[in-house]
Image 1: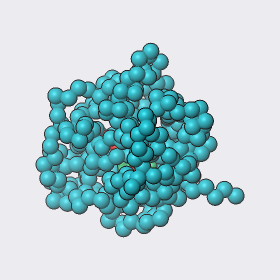
Image 2 (image 1 turned 90 degrees about the vertical axis):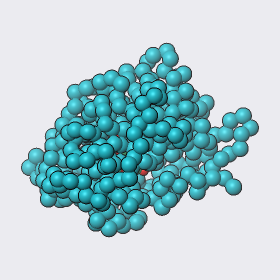
Image 3 (image 1 turned 180 degrees about the vertical axis):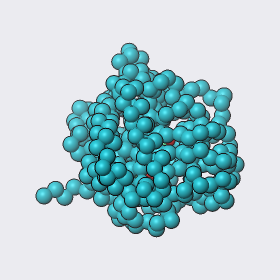
Image 4 (image 1 turned 30 degrees about the vertical axis):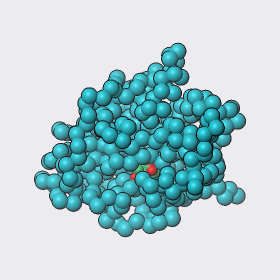
Length: 347
Ligand SMILES: C=C1C[C@]23C[C@H]1CC[C@H]2[C@@]12CCC[C@@](C)(C(=O)O1)[C@H]2[C@@H]3C(=O)O
Ligand SMILES: O=C(O)CCC(=O)C(=O)O
Ligand SMILES: [Fe+2]
């Protein structure tokens, strides 16, 4: 018997009402409804420098990574072994999924107390406006098969195969990224075993779809948030109108891929806690493109739900956060959302 909580179980606690799960039938909408109209979001601050680029294998990689984690909380990654072909396949399957009629997609609707399947972003309940967005969340092999069969009863295998291949590749890449981050924080190989055990890692894959929008300037793709786990590896299908990060709490900086196949690594709250705030999780949002639609594929990676995280304080610095297990932090985030980290502040 295994009593370890999975990421999936952790989201089963607080049931959500259906109107916070089922997206709008975006294709049938001709004007932006008031429910989806956001007060003018400030445009990006184009004067900023571009997000730092870490090229795996380059002699500069460790140095740039350290700088990027300290100053930005985000970096672009090239030199990884995820092929362009696989990245394109995943986007292609995501598109096939989101192009299904709403009635078919809702056959795989996330349940009120579930973490996986089709629906709005989980965080929707923390905002009074709705986002111009549909998502599909995958947390482990069982839910994948079940949800894919609900969508394509006869033809679910190609989708599952591609997703599984992507998850396997991403998991290996994330182990490597974890190693780089931990090394750069001066942690030991023992810590690495705990933080990146592929057998107990907490992972989730999220397909994001931003449909064509009648009024992109007043719509919000994904509202500002930080990601919960250690970090997120994001693939974007286009080079404009997408991810923006909040730099230094002031301006929104676009983080479109700098090269074909460049992935964006977004630091999450668990690395923020571990690094005692030195590698801060970065607030980010997604805009809606001016024309056409947009797809992004986010892979969330973290350690076992049972791992207790204790901040590593450097140079006699005070410990800024209390120690917390991953599962307790996930609960705090579900309750307090963007205030979860301050709930953890050491008194
Ligand atoms: C492992 C994760 C990470 C989740 C929850 C769960 C599965 C879905 C992820 C997202 C995806 C969209 C933004 C976010 C804020 C959301 O609402 O759902 C993410 C959240 C988090 O990073 O907190
Ligand atoms: O679509 C994007 O660019 C952002 C996606 C994101 O932030 C997420 O899935 O958590
Ligand atoms: Fe995110």
